[in-house]
Length: 437
Ligand code: ASP
Ligand code: MG
Image 1 (cartoon, protein in one colour):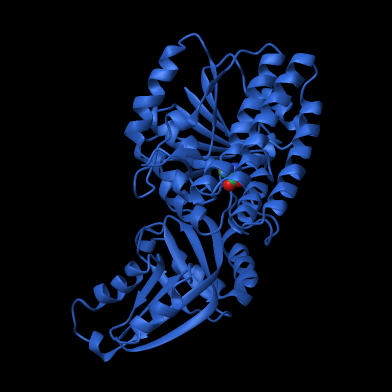
Image 2: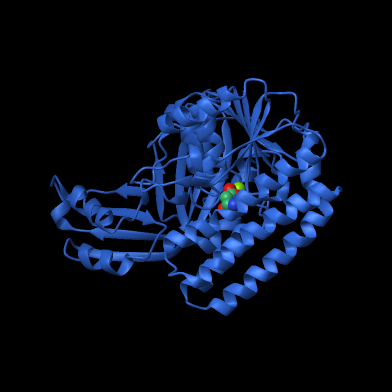
């Protein structure tokens, strides 16, 4: 069985929704995971923020504007009285719920209920549409099987135990539809897998039912070998290993939610990135295989902060790095890159919310220096023992750019470099030219 996930733009208009059947063959047994209609989750975030700020009239205004969009949407989607009536009832139900929060004490718990409405609406609209045109389908409520624990980690065994019986109950049915993004947390409340989390849902379902394949349908023809917004002539990458895909997804390639790689990897479910606008294009296939002797892709993540801690106490000492890392741990701040010398260590962080406190604590170890507006450029491929002189080629391509950090050998498939944000574009172009042209 395959899992097919369609993102917000793939369900972004009535026309796009109707065209999904060009890709979905309703005769195949499969699970279709849908995001909210594009723009909806952003609007729901704004509505929640208005409620959280106690601004009920602003919340009402935003809610009415979003509802007006759906009122038009359903008129174009449905062509029968019945279809339109069902669509209307659905939209009224969800928007009455959103409006009802004006009468309640609004907390982040209520916010998560609001954020869940986008996927609940898109999947049910699709189900009603399929019913209208006579295509049988079953709606699977994600809130009945998608579960995260106290640390917000999805529980794959729970998903298997709850989803598999639902599928077994309908052995004749082929087309299942479910919501991306939404889940229940350890308190049983409605929660979500963070922004962009529908990819993660698809991968988790793929892992939980040991699917034959997970397909992520978006509007670009796979993961590209460089950022297409910055560099001309980028190409889709035909094949990536899970490790390579995880590095790229984290370091810039926005096409895939980074965490979504891991469940599929653990249960060896191939993931294919495909383009709704060009369904026959091969896209990118992500599997456990890694191709030898090839540089695959270049990605960048900007807005990074570098921190250097210099201390004579580091010399010949043990336990020094642990104490440094514990500071970041206390402030729940992930570190991305690390480089060390005998008397200094540099690390990078992306989340600077607690930077002030972190610096204050680090000051007790030695001299602390901060560089803001840095970019991590990451080159992904087979760097095993660098048989091919790739590292030299990477450095050669960047010889005219000041480098703040170089991280090599952490894994066999990545070399990361830290440079100023202002040099990001030039670095990406120069590397592309040197490595791919
Ligand atoms: N609708 C959610 C979002 O916009 C989840 C997703 O689309 O992946 O973040
Ligand atoms: Mg997405």
